[in-house]
Amino acid sequence: MPQEDKIVIKDFSFYYDSLPALEQITLTIHKNEIFSIFGPARSGKTTLLKSLNRLTELVIGTRHSGTIFLDGSDIYDPGLNLTQLRRRVGMVFDLPTPLPISIFDNIVYGPKLGGIKEKRRLTDIVEKALRGAALWEEVKDRLHTSALRLSGGQQQRLCIARVLALEPEVLMLDEPCSGLDPISTASIEESLRQLKKDYTIILVPHNIQQASRVADRAAFLLNGTLVEVGKTYEIFARPKDKRTEDYVTGKFG
Picture 1 (cartoon, one colour):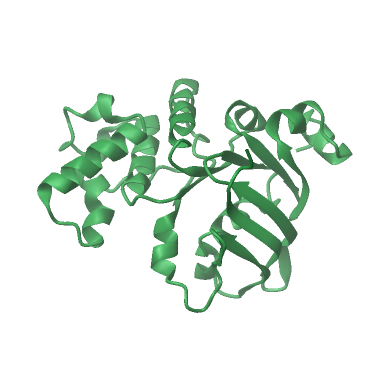
Picture 2 (cartoon, helix red, strand yellow):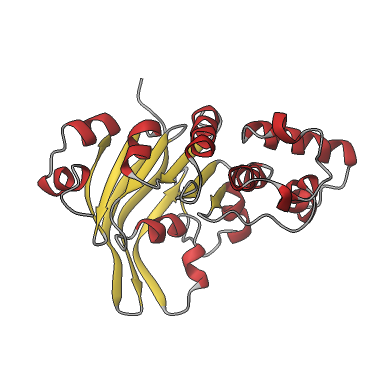
């Protein structure tokens, strides 16, 4: 049974002033898969992520060509609601950034801004989001304590829960385990496996081993170009491009 396309990127290039960060990227991301984008530093991974919900537009002097479709709709359509796009395509960054308020208030911050005020509904949102991020059992008895008292791994899962509270369709994670210990990393990876039942997940991994563990498909970027895309086990076991082989075997990067 063919998989449904969630995001389609066509001939997409992106520039910071005159410097190209991405060049002619064409790829498709399926609904309910974990899709990994990997490559060495400055290969364009974060720029590609931020382009998917137009966070790149917060940087002055940028431009793009080509386009990106979400469920068949052009995200660069002038009539698009940008706030709605960023709710549908949420992003978790590499460093956890909990707000200096309670765990509960961290989660409900976004929904409250969206106009949700009913206490019961907010309580339900908090439990659902924390369960989705595999954090509920660890914090359910201290929801009204400061989020800053959580461990690094717990803070990162809280940030995932904060995005989930906005009910996105796509969850993007930019090296979410870069500063975490192996146990916290394993917790987040297990969370992602569970979350893909309900979300499309796009992951820039901390290392290629993480990509091989959790991703269904992967794309290798090098110097802003797409070198290879395919099923993860094929890319790591039988890469088609010599540059991919050299990278995954540690010859550079």
